[in-house]
Image 1 (cartoon, rainbow, N blue to C red):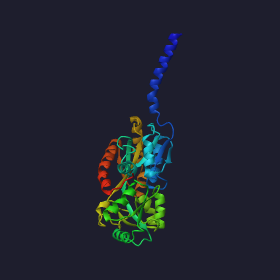
Image 2: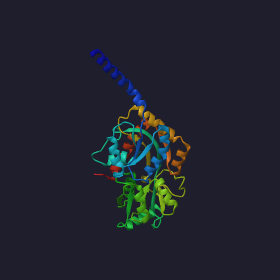
Image 3: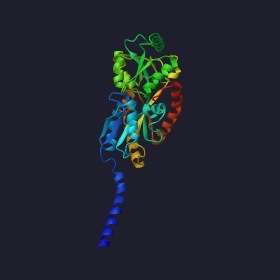
Image 4: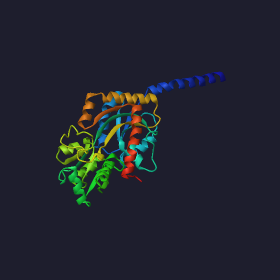
Amino acid sequence: MRRRSTFALAAAAWAALGSGPARAQAWPARPIKLIVGFPPGGGIDIVARNLQPGLQEALGQPVVIDYKPGAGGLLAAAELARTPADGYTLLVANIGPFVLSPLMKRSRPFEPTRDFTWVGQTSGSGFIAAVPAQHPAGTLKEFVDWARANPDKASYASGGVGSITHLNGEMLNQAAGLKLVHVPYKGSAPAVQDLIGGQVQLLVDVASVLGPQVQAGKLKVLYVTEPQRMAGLPNVPTAREAGFPALESTGWQGLVAPPGLPREVLQKVAAALKTTLARPEVRQRFVQTGSNLIERGPEEFAAFIAAELQRWEPVIKASGATLD
């Protein structure tokens, strides 16, 4: 009787060991959560919606977008760092919460190069600086002159403290010697609405967010932050052409997962992302929203993040921007 029990236990143990790879190969076996650390309607939401259908088809499971706004995306990023690495939680990353915010804090909530699994970059783009259609300034120089003459009225909006839109405004303050008041919002969408209404006077954000309102005649563009003029705005000068080369900046987007994601799962997610980005309709949507398709795999994306931290650290120190 004892021999039979021992044999049964041994057989069960071997079965359990054998089922481990099978369970790993079965991933994904349930829906996948795709976190957006900003409210609906912003640039990161647009990227998530561009990727969602293709990822669902490639992975064979529903991909559910989960909005968790707050602190310019920093709250969602910090939560992701504590999430189990089972492959069922991904996040659409951008420069704000993963590079700029950590560099602005004395005590970092996480280490970007250590506390995440970088899956792949999807896109990147410069920014456009927009003011309300009724604003008296039509150029960057005119806006600077207006801000100096109206310090009590001059303010700029951002999608949250520590976001790239926050730093873009601080860079203008530094480059032009202004004292624009920073008005942070929980995402770009509410910031755009107040910009249209004239409650704030400037927002430097991606074309996918500001472009539709520019086309509708509700906003006008003063300059773009890319080194070259944007194809969709050929008559708008670059920051360098407007006399402020220090205002050049670009943002990026991509997929990130919790730390310690199993290699076989990482490879599957990265392959699904690559397949999604190869779809003509996905590529077209990125172009239509003013983004440049930039594909980097896991290793290349991780190295890019490390380089971004080194690049922006002296800029942030010089600006004096802080989250503490």
